[in-house]
Length: 108
Image (cartoon, rainbow, N blue to C red; front, top):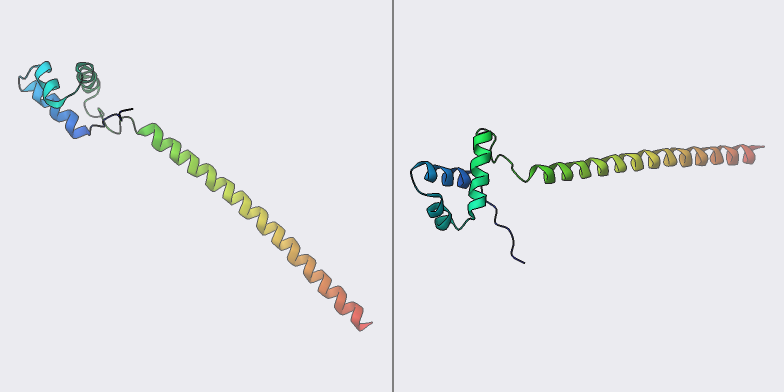
């Protein structure tokens, strides 16, 4: 299976500038080997919101998912760390009490 090509924001804006300079959509598509429907989508996105067009387009969800996964892992590790601290404190208290009993038993 062929991997999808990824285009940078600068590349997309450059292609749209070529259209504005008077080149035909068919010519631009042939030159850059892109499908006309892709060019139409880029034009629509740019018309709808020029400042935000193509900014992080397509990667936002993946980045948020990775961040959420890392947050879950941090939470899990924090909970495990707290559990281990409590278990260690109980163990140390138990050992301390055993030492006291041995000392008390040995003196009487």
